[in-house]
Length: 354
Image (cartoon, rainbow, N blue to C red; front, side):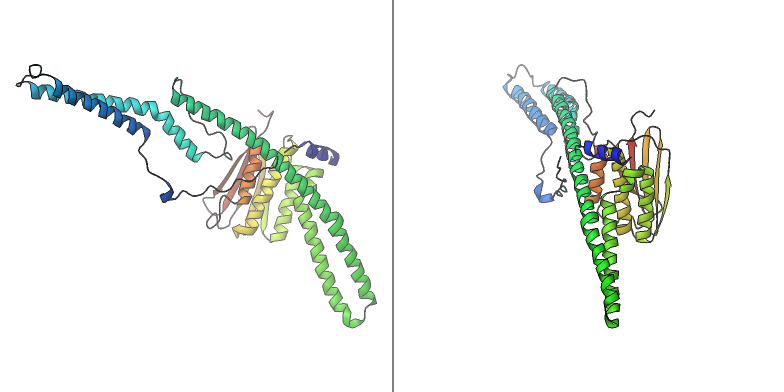
């Protein structure tokens, strides 16, 4: 089992990816208000049409517009002009509607939430060609983002493994040797030094436990050896003991076959969600659920804490979870619960499931 997991990790080929910075808030002074293009074109059309009508009235000889009928004919002409302008406005708004939708999408598009596209219309126009080109650009960017996120996360996991091994093999063994030396020194020391030496031993033992805990967080051995379900059970129990809160877990044992990438993403999202519960939620209890239905694996982490108030919904941990969800084409949602607290949900499509 361990060999299979190790090979799966080696097969991962995830690029160094720079975490996207927060988008700067748009200041009122930085935005220049401008008239929409449809109104500028309409204004030009209206100016040309009105100028043509005025020139027609002025240039036509008096016998064409006789005095008795001049006012009536001018009124009819003005009504016709207004009607043409209204029709022109309707046609322009219809023609420029894809451009407006494209602009709105450009403002809200986020590569961490893929799938947003400008609706395509069967129309051969420059505006629709621009919208189609933008959609194709989003396709390429999302693909490249997924590949680069994969390489970055693989590099991150490799570094986690290296640091975990260093903590276990170097720091852990060194601290264990120090404990043995202190125990030997305590046996040989005079009575007035035994109590201080015991205090030093307790401090070293605490540091050794911390190093082991960090190594386990960096590299989940249970995931490599026992699989996803057992690893999540160990994770929930460890966080519950560490933070002294009740973490209820409902995890299906009979899970469908997942790739190592998928298992690792689910584990890391659950780990980050529980970390946020312990550090920021001020919760007394939490719930970890994992199951599958309708061809999707569903992970839910709920708490009864203070919710999202006063916290950033786009912090580094949340961005990391979204990056990982993007890697396996999963959907991540973070929302406040109706009663109290926050729910983190991850929906992962399972290949081969009906």
